Image (cartoon, rainbow, N blue to C red; front, side, top):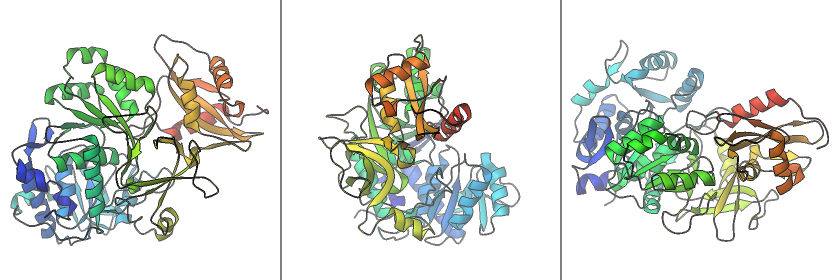
Length: 517
């Protein structure tokens, strides 16, 4: 019988091929049998610390392989892991630990100073467990693990019980604890694995943060369920990515457009290493420019599947099929079992090509936000729909296109301007390699778009030329009032373009636009 505890996601692989590699990092290789035994020991370790089903366990790790066993071993104990974004400032990190009601903090020895500070500042933490040499006030992870039994059974849970509580990035306020369920995560990981056609022969390269949904939902969970191997890098470095593909014969990777662009820029390394094993890549969190798709497929060759998801939404909601029609710029089709609507501002169903808010309903939806009933009621309606806050449209074939956040929409004198559509227009210019559009205040219109562009090597274009290019091809109210040429876009800790930095930079450069244009 299939287990209900998502901590047993390796239930089938460990029985069918226990000696196949499950996790690889550097010179460390864990087979499925070894990983299963270690996750059982983690569960026993936590029970020995009096961690009860439903208790929160904070997990503070960079991209290190023990993160995997701690996260899923916690679930086996019936506990709820709280993976922490190590790039957050200390006060925000402390807020997440306090707000989650975590009783135990398991941390990497590389982050021991932060972990000790959290243990001292957060009164609810009963125990601090640290890998490597444990400082005073902390317990040794390795010693506790060695003393724990690998024979314990997974704690019984119901499909709707919470299995994980990640915190959102907090771009619109303080981070929110998202309540993901055991049954929901089984469904989503299974569907992603099916859509991607992943199997035991796949090796997924993970260079994005393990605590982020990009890695967990698109690689870690579906690969471990289907018997593939995870090749973990300590962080993203384009040269290390290329070398790892060649060394470990990786077949699949996940990332964001900026990461793929940096890899493609390494022409010399690509010519020196055999990367022909890579046959598939998943890209989320941002739109993939058409030229990037073409260059990627020419270089490896491998297809890129654009998709869309959000932590509380499944996480994965939309995906382009691995084989069959894929539409450039589209986030793809809903996963089987996932319902999607585009709702116009007046509450009606938006027509084909019309923009509106994306609503989602599927078995993987979060139960809501931890200790935030009002926000939960605001985002999750009585009929089970999640109001994502993302703008989208669909075409006549049912493919969906993400236009950005509702908050990113620019109201220019009563006309709605979607940054992505202006960016797409700029990308048609032969000199433009990347384009990012944000809003600035306008004395007459209220607000108006400005653009930041990265030009192709050896190609030139003036800001005025790019403004006129947009005016000639799109509505006048949507053209960027200013265009700034930059060397590279600022990136967030998860590799996405940091639009908050661009918005601040635009206001710094422009102030308030004047005139009626």
